Length: 340
Image (cartoon, rainbow, N blue to C red):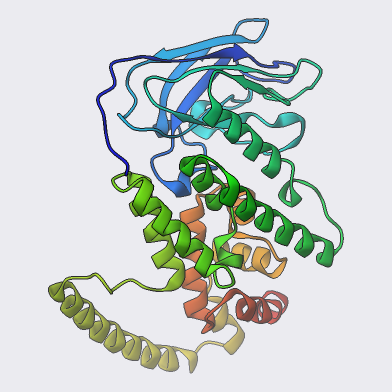
């Protein structure tokens, strides 16, 4: 069972990284309070920073972490950027971040292979078994199908399937529940939840048993509820009544809007009227869905949060009168081609 214990200590993260690219001489440590923030960079989550000397040496210390272990990002920023518009570059020579599991007692040394180019190229970790596992997980994910140009659709799908299968296998055999959670969190829920629901649910029971009071446990369960469509089972009676009332109001509004659209359509050409149904951002996202991009890839391409992508997609499903991504892709071609 997970429990919170008082820790009277200071964490230390030090090491040597590669500064061969156009990187600022500052390294940032950012907290990951929610699982959806695992692969995003946002200045509001930075909790510490340190200078990097000309040889790539750095040292971060502090005692301001929560009294339990959780995920953190350690990353660099390009010369032309600020910490407020930083990007995480995944794979290749620009790979500029790693994930860590930390608490206030963590003592870690990180050393990049000096024969590589990326800041954290083929890095090693000394002093922490759990973060050695995080390093192994990183080597599984980066590189992967998401970070190479794959020409053939079947090859792309096979690569996606293999990565998700490998992530589940890694989680099943990992000795750390938190690192297993990181692996599960890197799977593509959007594409694989329906076919792997039992595995996601089994891991939820593992979290409830091992990390009962950890914020990630509740966060993970909420993610599963989102992808399973189960929102109301544990809702109070009053909340259910309010939802029912809201549903009635929405139905009435939809009726009014439908009637209004019929009236408007009498005076507006059919093609022009239908164009008004979609924002420019929705059309961009629809185009990327049509091209087979995942939610993570869409978020990266449009420089928006994963949660924002999901919100846009839900609105698109409503406008398209579809229930899933496959149906949306079928509708996308005619809409993008004709603009109607």
